[in-house]
Length: 291
Image (tube, rainbow, N blue to C red):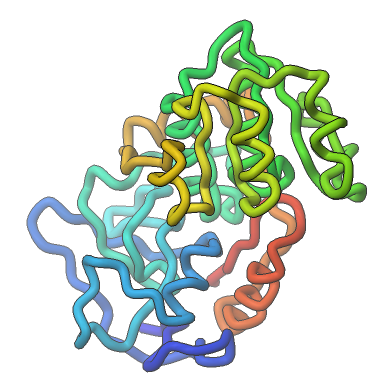
């Protein structure tokens, strides 16, 4: 099969199309012919040289990608998640890591839906977001932010979303009160009196979060992993499941969630997709598509 893979870590250009053996499913597993796969900063970190604990030193070539949508060997249309290996024509995962794709969900949405939706859902659970809360989301226009704004709104919370000037209307359309990040952000946010923070930006935004919310258990960062433990701030625990994914896909199918794909790339342009994801800017999701 074809896969966008790399044989040594490095810049985006190390990603190239390779012919690799197609995976075979074992007991309790399902093979999916991939039609779309989401692109995440996580993927770029692996490509650049970060080695997750579950990877061995001799696990080469490496195929990034941990979310996908496609058709099983039995002909079922599904979306799901993996650890890696989704930038390929086929991926094999345990049966409990896929769920049925809603008929009205486009393939490019399904391919990029799992990570952002599940991360946002888990994060809001950790933060105990509910009616009466005012949640500040740093990076509200990104894929996780997009989902978190909507899910927090469904939970009854007021949402303040930081984003660039260009994304203010987009954040407002999701149901948040948009705030431009940059100089003076603290003053623009403080009057809203946030009770919890989801930090998707790090740096100054993380520092501001510590300043604005006294209860550190109600601050969660997606990016400041090294500082989180020191400051008593939450990180997203592993909590992905097909049950959670099915619930979120159902909300999409019912029109209660929207999901923005800002650009798609063919598999052969995976390197270009990585160059764009590493800019750290832009709204919504980047997705690879396969015929």
